[in-house]
Amino acid sequence: MSRVVIIGGGPGGYESALVAAQLGADVTVVDTDGVGGSAVLTDCVPSKTLIATAELMTDMAEAAELGIEARDHQGDLSTTLEVDLAKVNARVKRLASDQSADIARRLEREKVRVVPGRGLLESPGAVVAELADGGTETLTADAVLVATGAAPRTLPSAVPDGERILTWEQVYDLTEVPTELIVVGSGVTGAEFASAYLALGIPVTLVSSRDRVLPGEDADAAQVLEDVLTRRGMKVLGQSRMESVTRSGDVVTVRLTDGREVQGSHCILALGSVPNTAGLGLEEAGVTLDDGGFVKVDRVSRTSARGVYAAGDCTGVLMLASVAAMQGRIAMWHFLGDAVAPLDLKRVSSNVFTAPEIATVGWSQRAIDAGEIQAETVMLPLRGNPRAKMQGVHDGFVKLFCRPGTGIVVGGVVVGPRASELIHPVSLAVAESITADQLAQAFTVYPSMSGSVAEAARRLHHF
Figure 1: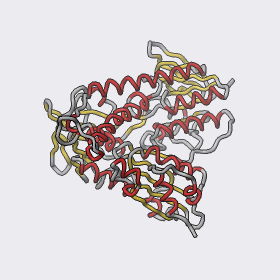
Figure 2 (figure 1 turned 60 degrees about the vertical axis):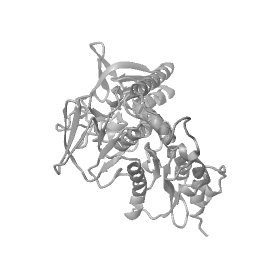
Figure 3 (figure 1 turned 90 degrees about the vertical axis):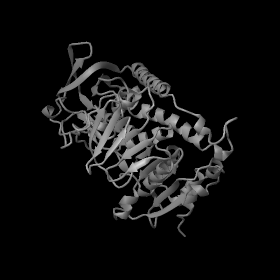
Figure 4 (figure 1 turned 120 degrees about the vertical axis):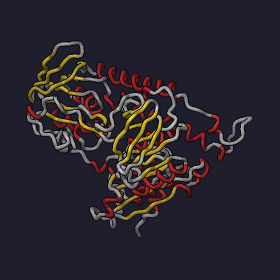
């Protein structure tokens, strides 16, 4: 029986453990923070639970257009509502804990041993677990998977205090509603928190060092989001680089490199991530790290050390829970001799959980404009969709890319409510090399948002 030791219990770790156990391996997971990792306990699950509350508030803000008003109240229904942040955060932490417990029970059912502690790579065939209750245990392995994740990046000039200057992992300890929130960083994490807290009725200022929100996303989608956020009252400071963040009593001051200052009651730092790879014995065991400290892997998750694999945020490949899980599964399929296909990032669908959401898959508009691939494009605004009109949706679009000649769909973007669900037919088309005509000919419900996906595909019809 093959022995597999996994360092880290996040999506890359626990999903690989389930695959290895299914294929008959003896599996041990050395986990530091709790099964599920940051994705379940401090990042993805908590943030999307918070955003679920924000989505409800967004719906309430637009209820008047649909003819819903509060009895004995004049004006928008949303103005009668307020958020109890202590209750919201208690629910967030409870759901995260429950999800972690569910995963732990699943691992136990599959006979996966979980060792609470910090795993160190002693050699390609041995892991030393520094046990949470003291002492150490050496675990021999035929294969090791490193899935230690990443942590929020901080700077000496902007040190979190866990009270008013916060990383995105610390916001769930808030019990009072910020009177003025500053979010530093306009990438996915910064945009999501800025959008969510704005929807909860909190004044938000977003500090962006780039010329627009979400510089790494589709430009048309990012413009729609920025327009919506500013229309709803957010202050977006573009091309504004943070120099320092300091606190004096209840006031947080963000100083910009051009000398301006922005003050608020709280500040969330969304400055990117650093891999949890230091001090684990990786390089000593022959595992190559890049200049940023990320583990270098190939498309089947192998590192430079024989028998050592890596998955998830510690590799820096694409920081998504779904990618971490797939990297982990691929590693075990490869090591244990099951059928395996190398990781293909052009089939990865992703979503930014702002309001509206932004979902993407496959080739991007930027790659097409740069000449990396030839593709035809159609963009269809959602405001013409009958279901969108019924629901009062005015912002968003469906954009599809297909190859000239063959008509094969190679990518797409959806901006709108529940875009994370609407991207799925496009993702299937990309994964299975379906043509725009084939996508258009599949029946959709009338009326439905997904009808816009089919309509966009019809507009790419080749005579």
